[in-house]
Length: 153
Image 1 (tube, rainbow, N blue to C red):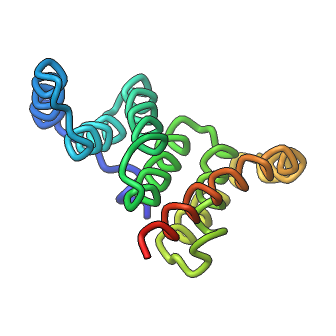
Image 2: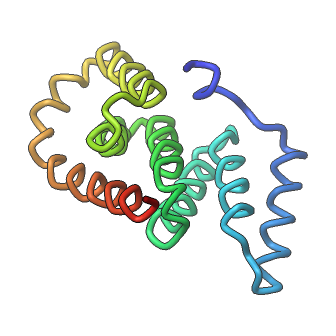
Image 3: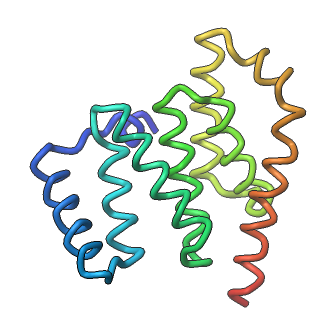
């Protein structure tokens, strides 16, 4: 998990995906695939502003994008929030996926990784106290995933 979280993209590769994204955007033919690729590149940047920008693109994709890719969007949104040290938000996205896919090993691993980091930083108890406010958010995320998986059958 550490390799996924700490992977850094080269500035040249980031610029290449940014160029493709902006070209499609200028032509009015921006594809979800290009948006996702660019967002994932931003999340692998060394700059927190890029992590925020990547998160925002993923959130847009989640809200209006491909129903079949919602789980992937949430997963990478959780990674962005982890990198931004917004651990409670990262856990919210993990829990949303797990509410619909309880056996998802990749998400379970990410959740454990986040909780381990919170424990190191002494934040796990705070997350439990604040957990009640996250229940509504998790329910909304899970409902979105459930609707997406039901529509694909």
